[in-house]
Image 1 (cartoon, rainbow, N blue to C red):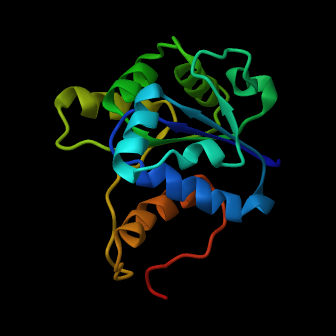
Image 2 (cartoon, one colour):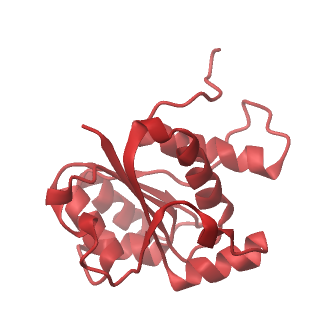
Amino acid sequence: MTNKILIVVSGASGAIYPKLLIDKLLRINDQWEELSVVMSTNAKEIWRSELGNEDYKDLPVKFYEKNDFNAPFASGSAKYNIMIVSPCSMGTLARIASGISNDLVTRAADVILKERRRLVLMLRETPYSLIHIKNMEAVTVAGGIICPATPSFYSKPATIEEVAMTVVDRLIDLAGLNISTFRWGN
């Protein structure tokens, strides 16, 4: 199957993650057929605030509005097989965990889970409340993968981008794509 990927950028802090994720996915474009993005209004504001630009507008990807239920990934028949939410707010996690399909993001997650495809949620919050933990459990039991934005330091990252890239590379690995990155033991 050729990969069809949906990247969701929710309104949590951490705009560097989706920026680096999309940049890297564009470099490995031989591994996917379609790359689509949904950004919340808050995500756009956080991008502007944290990164100081609106470069997301220039990305060569297909953007969808969060209430566009005509988007292909709103149905399992479109065969989108990878969905990554980066960063994933606790509100987005809660709605996905509860099966509330009230917008394109939660509908797409519902589709990915019901079709037994790959859903990766990169949570960007600390500390976790018991409600957060129970929501993470519900998504995990349903087949999703929880990947907190917890960087590693084995590779001795020297810049904030390199630190963030340790999380992005983990997301890409969890999505099942092949990348060149630091590997423990090498």
